[in-house]
Image 1 (cartoon, rainbow, N blue to C red):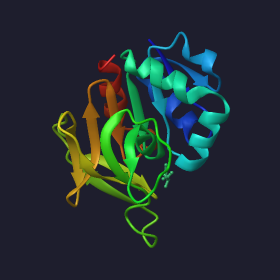
Image 2: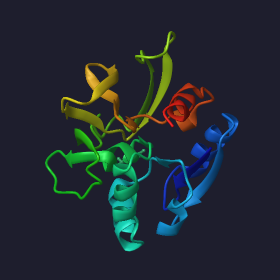
Image 3: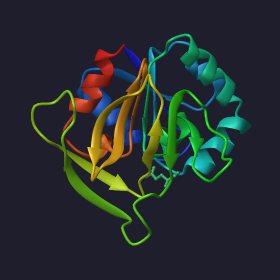
Image 4: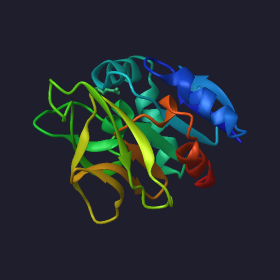
Length: 186
Ligand code: GLN
């Protein structure tokens, strides 16, 4: 299995490391042609406004949408979750509009830049340590969206068909259960 990791900006190397330790082959995606022979895509954390600008500049936005609509699995973390959503609350920020979710950026407040919390995730028997960094959360979801985890009543992990998104950073922990779960979606 070959997993592309969007490598325009942000925490892409950490995702490659986690995916490799689950036995997957990875490659870095910077140009539209890089998408051709991958089985799935990871959109990492970083700065969603910068990433969207670069996606448009490199002609990647339409290409990713095209492959996604034909069934390619995508996992978005943090800024990646923002990019997968159909809308950013109180903003007209451009997104991929692949998931029926509305997100709020930097949603846990300025004072709380980052924190860790144990999360109960739907498909796991034991808690998962979530690392949140200037994290978004999901304000509302449409009918086809499965909520997989909440933190203090806020939705922080969702799945919809071939798309998976988390507000936290599983690539920054040694616990590879989420990456393994994503690979099982392919
Ligand atoms: N706050 C960032 C954004 O909305 C996301 C932060 C992150 O990916 N760690 O783009």
